Structure formats: structure tokens, C-alpha cells
Length: 120
Image 1 (cartoon, one colour):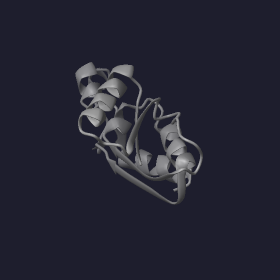
Image 2: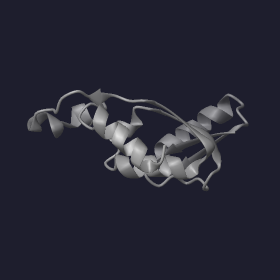
Image 3: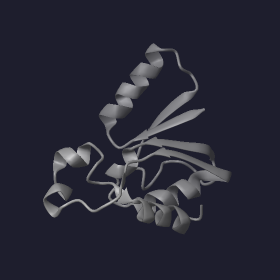
Image 4: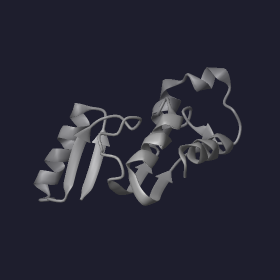
């Protein structure tokens, strides 16, 4: 079973339509935020994420949630853009850089810190 989570009803609707059109019966889509996953404790085998972490305003909470929902063995596979240096202030608030997953990125040190603090 695959569970997809998105915070917009439009994305959930589109995903459900695509699953139905392609006759996928092992998928489910839930409306929710990655900082408050609509999934029971210790119920997930693997979390896969591709850059959406960069869009989270609370990465610490996001990794705590990932740890909460994962079963023993906890496998987290992420594709993530990281910063090697801080962006200038004027670029940090650039909406195009944010939606492109650039200005919301963390440093490598912060990312490792969030993951370790969550318990991984």
C-alpha cells in the first residue's frame, strides 16, 4: 500500500483521478501537512520525499513526524537540496526561489541536526 499526502485538495483530487485512470488499487491519498501526517504511529515502512522538505517552514517538526509514523527499522529516503552557504536576505524571501525549493533549504549541519534530534 502506498499513501500519498498533500496539503491541497486539488493535488489529492488529481492524484486520485490518475490512480483510477491507471487502475492502481494499492494507493491512497490523504489531505494533510508533512508536519502533521495523517497516519497512525508506527504504521509506515518507508517514507520517500523529493524536495518537498525544502517547502516546510518547520523542518524539525517534519522529521519528528517522520520518526513517529515509521515502524521499527525506520527507513527515510529523501532527495533534498542543501545549502553550503547562506543566501543573501533579499534572495531568502524570493518566492520563485522558495517554490523552486532553493530558498527553503537548510544547511547540511542543520539537516543532520534535525534528523538526529528526531531520533534517527
